Image (cartoon, rainbow, N blue to C red; front, top):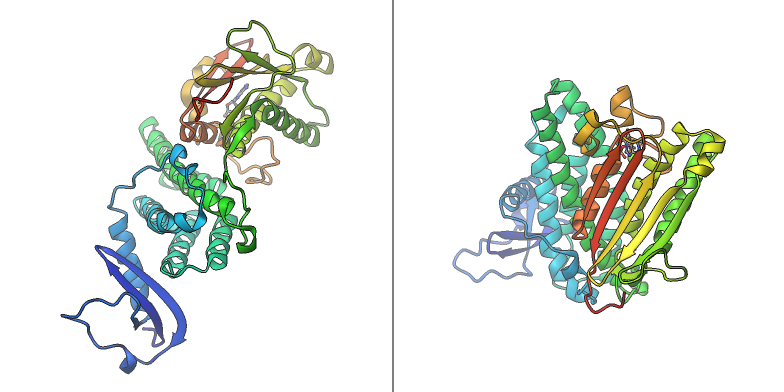
Length: 410
Ligand SMILES: Nc1ncnc2c1ncn2[C@@H]1O[C@H](COP(=O)(O)OP(=O)(O)OP(=O)(O)O)[C@@H](O)[C@H]1O
Ligand SMILES: [Mg+2]
């Protein structure tokens, strides 16, 4: 049992405990007397052993994980424009989401034997502790922004870590039936969707925080009210081309075209603007294009490639932006079916090895998480992503995104 005692500020709310570790150490005899019968003073400092503190955190995590997490939609997030106003929201919402994910890992039989899952569990617990130790009643915005930025930085390989952890767990437990695969896919969907929601909250906070506090000082936060969808598609195509060139020494042709309701045919110099989180659209487009480019390169000679460009069509009306990515790379065999949406299906899963440099976004293929993750982002944006394969011909991906602002011009 640890003998060191930590001094910390304790504030009890209904079922909710906020603890702030102050760093100074005291002996057990110096612990403040019991306040039974007294009003609880939210700023009073008390001391508890580190071990007891960990127990309190564990108990609080267990409790919070049972409280239903209310989804915070992108529409809500983008209305928050003042970082100080957002403090109480992230104080309430972010630790809950970490607690939920800690518990999700604990629901998996045998998770303790998988280093990736253990690492994620430890990280989430540490992040949770870091957040409850922040002083929310008198926030030092620099400390706040710094804490959230380091959590985001440390968590940037979560997709690779969780997919690889689940992949190993499934192998270790020898659970390969369709039902068991669906279970692992649903688990990853829930875990990663919760991460997208948490990151959107954190990113909005950091984006609107003032530059002198370490934030980005962006008045509209993570959204761009005039996001140029066509430019993002072009940019994603350039990134994917570059990755192809690095990997294969050649790159496929592509064409980006704009279409608009009421006008037939491609519209020149008429880019599609709408209110959106640009980084999410870029992520989805990169995943779709990496797949189409790779399939095109693998099925084409140099001559064929110029005859079979990958087409990206950005179509819009007042309510929706629809993006179609089509290639002529032979399609996906019908028997593969919905497996493309499984985290357990994909290049690496098929060859049964971990690809070189796995987790590196510069790789053309990884663990088979590109499509399921892109679909999660589309869902988070309130839209949907589907794929239709025409065997022997090619593949079409359809991304439908609602416009956030019904008043924006087409
Ligand atoms: N346009 C396409 N043409 C042919 N096959 C495709 C296409 N898109 C996806 N696929 C098939 O679907 C599988 C799953 O795609 P997904 O993007 O999820 O994983 P991946 O590309 O193997 O790896 P990751 O995207 O994680 O780097 C691919 O491995 C490929 O076999
Ligand atoms: Mg992919």
